[in-house]
Image 1: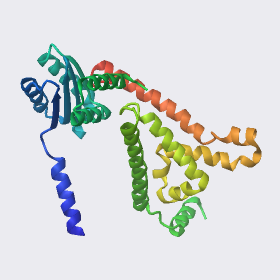
Image 2: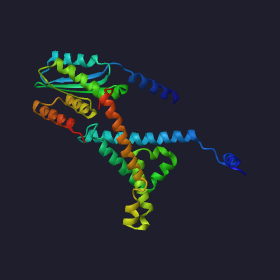
Image 3: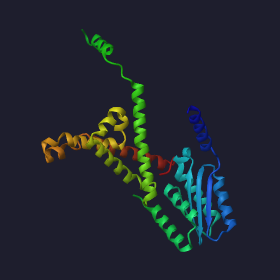
Image 4: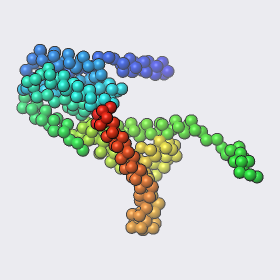
Length: 134
Length: 151
């Protein structure tokens, strides 16, 4: 029992210390160049722990989760990533969020890979969700 | 017997307070309550259209509601006896303070008893909650304007 506990603690510590961010991206038209460009931007940021992105018809929705100690500067990190992504994709309507709910919803979209009409509705819903204050 | 010797006698005779043990149980109880709150907030975010920012309101309401039911049924008293401040400091302590005062003064009638005394304890929480929120906002406004942090 004690060994099992020690093993689980060590495993948790090791998995918690993993450095690279978990990134998943979905492109409706499967444009590898754009996917790679976004992946590079997100991978370069050392403070991210998880990120998801969805490309759709000149729209780009990105959500990010920051590492625990960087949570105090979450808004700042979000703004800097938003600037970087906007500079990389000037033709796209970029939407960046650091909210956990948005990350979950984007992950759902990436898993389900819905058809274009549904995707448009989902993304519109996400943006209105992110705007809500109370 | 003067005041000093009296105090010494009291110190000798009074049972020792298990401060470390109290700290631990308070930490454990408060931690468990907060973990339950986090879980409820995840439920609101996963199954309902709430974001991280908006999920906190229904979460607080749910936690207070649960604490009120537990107070009415008498279970919160047991949690309080075990956890001490750990059960009083989280928002559940507020629900407990409101309902326990209401139950206590029920015999004096619904208007002058329950209505007048319900916020006897919780009133202090509201007053100092609003006051400390004001102070914290003031400090944060100054810090944001100076440029140290963002909202």
